[in-house]
Image (cartoon, rainbow, N blue to C red; front, side, top):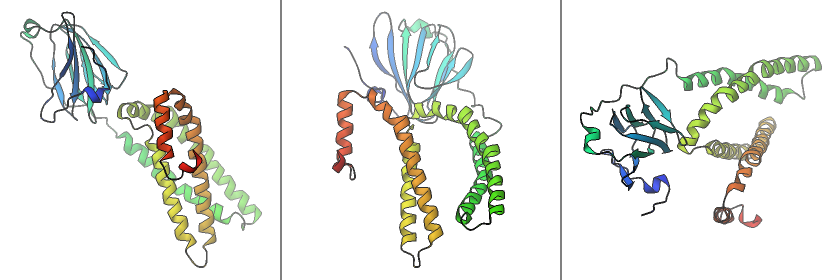
Length: 283
C-alpha cells in the first residue's frame, strides 16, 4: 500500500520509549520512521545490515561508523553492514527515516551488543554567552547616539563635529566589524538550526513585538502634559526606522518566496490575510 504524508503526520511519538513505525517492508528493504522525543536515543549497535538514515524533522545526533554527527533536515547518512550506528534527538523532537536493506533477520542481530551513548561533548566556551557579552559592551554606545540625536540642533558647531567624529569612529571601527563577523559566522550557524526547528520567521515576529512596544510607549508619552518633545522625537524616529527596516526585510527576503507556493497555498494565505483586522479593507 502506498503511503504519503508529512513526517509529523506519519510519526508515532511515545514519551515512555522509542517506538519505530514500519512504513513499508518487502524482501528487498524495510522502511522505518523513527520518532524521538527530546533526548530519546537508540543505543549504539552494529548489525549486519546496510542502512540509510535521513533526518526529516528536528535535529539528531547520528552515530556514523566511528563518530557522532549532528544531522538536520536534508542530511543523509549511509552506514554499511557491520558498522556502528545509533541516533539521539538533539534539542527537541526529531523524526528520522531509516531504509534498511535487506530487512534484518534474526541472524543479522546475533551477537550484536547495544552500548549507551557517551556523554555529549561540551564546548569550552558558551557561544551564546559570548554573543550576549559583546552586546552588553556595545549597548552603552547606542545611548551616546540617542544623546547626540537629542542635542544635535543645539550643539555649537565645533562640539557637534567632534562628537560626530567619535560616533562615526565607533560605528565604522567597532559596530560594522561586529556585524560582519555575525554575517560570516553567527547567522550561518543559526540558519542551520532554524531549518531544523522551523523557527526561521521568529525574528520577524520579534520585530512586531518591538513595534507594538514602541506604539505603547508613544501613546504613554502623548498623554503627558506638557508634551515631552525630545522623548517623542526619539520614539517617533525609532518607530519609523524599525517599521521601514521590517518592511524591507519582508519584501527583500520573504515576499519573493511566495512564488514557491502552489495555488491552494496561495489562496489560503490570501484568505487568512483577508480575515485579519487591518488587511480586510485592502484585499
